[in-house]
Length: 153
Image (cartoon, rainbow, N blue to C red):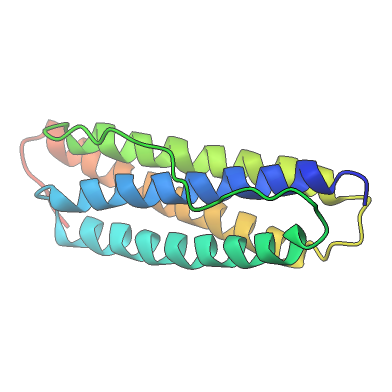
């Protein structure tokens, strides 16, 4: 496995994206939002927590192959702007989901010729695609209702 260092760097990058995503979701849930959206965001938060933990376990399994070690617990900082409208917040969450999906694609390409079992990576990517689709569908429901001055959920 000559590209294990690149694979580990990619795993760390995905882990940090999950950490950032958790912070964004936490900030979004602090806003006054409809119950259905709060339920969706809290579900996404729990899934991100689980997937982040699984990526940390994946990292632990890989790091034994390397002499130098990374520190996945150093999270990137994020500025959660309060007072943004909910549409902007949902768009930023969807963008972060897409970025994580892209990073999983890169990780799958790196792990293609290795002896790493990529089944869990495929499952994570599939879950993120589903979460993004659900979020965008819910976002589309909110937008037309806002234009008419009322919300029907």
